[in-house]
Every structure is written in structure tokens, then in C-alpha cells.
Amino acid sequence: MLSVKNLIKKFRSGDTNVFAVNDINFTVETGAFCTIIGKSGSGKSTLLSLLGALDKPTSGSIEVDGDDIAKLGDSRLIEYRRKKIGFVFQNYNLIPNLTALENVMIPMEFNGVDSQGQRERAEKLLDQVGLSGDKQNRKPGRLSGGEQQRVAIARALANKPKLILADEPTGNLDSATGKIIVNLLKNLAKSEQTTIIAVTHDEGIAEQAAVTFKLKDGKIAN
Image 1 (cartoon, one colour):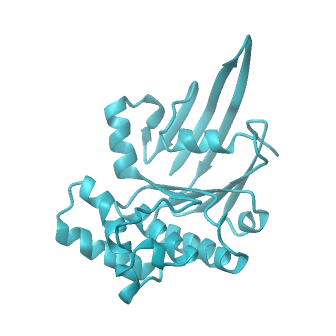
Image 2 (cartoon, rainbow, N blue to C red):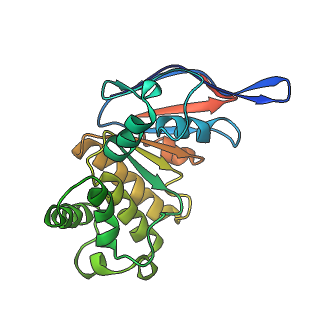
């Protein structure tokens, strides 16, 4: 479960405090697909960075699976990002000179999984996201955008994270492929028992989520 309480992130701009995230509270159950929507400048990117432990809040708490990541030191944060969180990006961020299979194996290598275990889980995950056979051995340049995003999703799941953060996961895809990817994320949240939060501008995606939070001026709008 993800629980965010009284979360604040402020910056100094001259003599003024700017609240990028301003007293946000919400809870998302394990296995739920959730979306965060809002206009540019609403605080979506800052909130995602805080949830992903890429930035530290000014105050408040972020509990993932019982751990308050706002209180973790740097070494524990590195461990948290490696073991408990997965990222899916708009631009896929795959390593171009590695195959789909090798891209999915990499996070497990950094997590101490032996090579056979890496390969077996990577193959299983790629099958699960609908990329099978010869395509698993293709490099990203020989895969469509939708196929590359499937690889990115499989990679995010590699270390069995408790939380997956997806930043505009359908932003570079056509609408039909985008719907397929959203359905895939919804189903994987349930089957893998991981919480998935997608930041999006697309209200059509938000309509398919179990929970949607709308941000405005750093706050959750009613």
C-alpha cells in the first residue's frame, strides 16, 4: 500500500516560497492502477520525483509497504529504488545496443540475481506483456513503439517492485496502442500485486483507473 500524508515540497524563488507540492494526502491500495492528472506546472512531475525517491520532501511522509521513504538515508534510498520501485517512461529509455531480453535482465543483475534466474524471469515477463518468440531477441530499434513500451513495463516489473511509476506511458503511442498499454498496466497491477501510478494528460486513461487524483497548483483538487 502507498500512503502519502501532509506531503510538502517547497522551493525558494527570490524572497518567495513556491509550493510545488502543497499538503497532499492520499492512499492507494496494493494492486490498484491509479492516475494523476493535471496541467503543466500543476506539480505532477515533482510529486512523481518524490514518490520515486528521486527528490526529498520538505515535510510529510511517503509510506510504501510500511517504510517511510521520506526518512530514509541515502544508502537506504538507493536500496529502495532498486528493490521496491519500477519506472516506466514516455520515451521508453531502453538501452539501444541490448536486446529486449537483456534490457529486462539488467535490473536483476544489479539486484544480485544469477544469470539463469535473470533470463527465466525476463522471458516470463516478456511473454506476460505480449512480447514473445524472436522479438525478445531484437534490439529496440527493430521494435515498434508499443513493443518497446512493453519491454519497458517488463523491465519495471523485473525486481517485483511494490510500486511502479509511469510517466506519460502512452505519450508517444497512437490511441489504439495506448489503450492496449493502459489495459496491460491495469491487469499487471492486479496480477503482480503492485501499485501502479501513471501521470498523464489523457483523461481517457484516467477514466480507466481505479483512482484518479487531479492536481492543481500543487494540491489535489476536489
